[in-house]
Image (cartoon, rainbow, N blue to C red; front, top):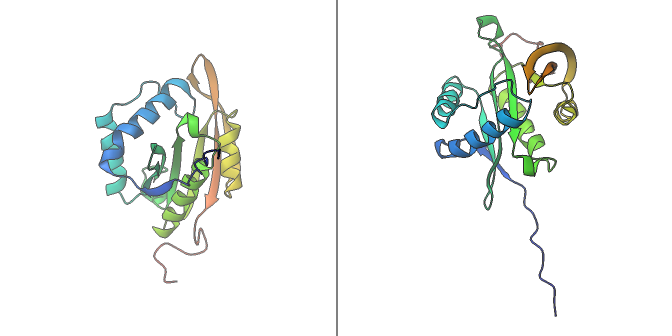
Length: 187
């Protein structure tokens, strides 16, 4: 008797976020807020608040992507948003990447971060900053380093969550022409 052929896992599709993705994104983020240290929020926002945040980013011209498997739904999401709100920072973005815990370590975070870097470059942004919660988050630090981010500093004991003080690791990566040309200069 022949053994059944195991299903070959397929790579997730990376695509632009859609409004219907919000319940899955909000649930994923809520779990990260409640159990992790990637976010320094302590109370998860509801679906409506998450939808407002998404709309604000999209209307501001920032990329917001999801990784989706046809059988499992949304596996993770990533976006780039303003690093700071003052006008001189407008060419610098901060990234965020969240992946469902049961799918971590399968390259989904890498695919999402690669896509966010590419989309940010395509949109003319010049620098990307990663603000990584918890200096013990070796997976996120390693992922960013593998994609060309360099460590630029650690802010020690700046957040208190889950009964302990947390550091923030700052990493940075140039995008596109980076600091070579002024924004808007002809190529």
